Image (cartoon, rainbow over all chains, first blue to last red):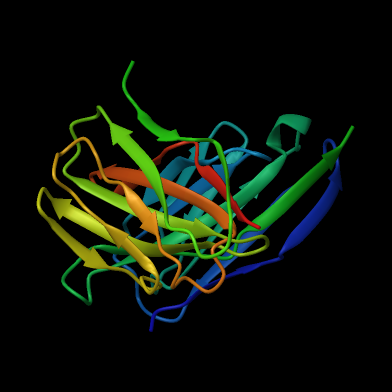
Length: 113
Length: 110
């Protein structure tokens, strides 16, 4: 079945450093979504990318969807302690006729002041 | 104040007991979902419902059951047949594809 892999599993940065997490799907996606889960909290939707090669920005966060619609990345510029949490990508496929969303394993980000 | 509520936040049960986790939404969303999250893993789909009185198995439905008698409510029962029920359970609803998650219930089976 469809699989979504994320790397790295964990990253520890100093405040002010940049951070990137990568997401790869075994199948072509109709869209990809990104979520953030703070420690002890629940996932919160950040953004959805639909078009091949699409790039979207939210302040210091830049999201990219690959040309083949099988991979995506999230880049955070100049991390802050408020960026701490686990970032999940989730790929949506229409293969089954139902808009199934498959979550990646997540990248846990720790930011030291 | 619209959103999804899950209760209780923490739940402890003895092995062999069935337990029901509550999920209520006032977002007027048709679709609702149950996910399970284990440490270091992503979210895995247990059951989903796209409309009242209809639900479908997800990837890990064995040992779980659900009902959808009302649009607002989608309770999940963890039965004694679930081999390893200790986990963080997240309920979600959706509009335009992306998920709105509840605060979750952390279930520990002793």
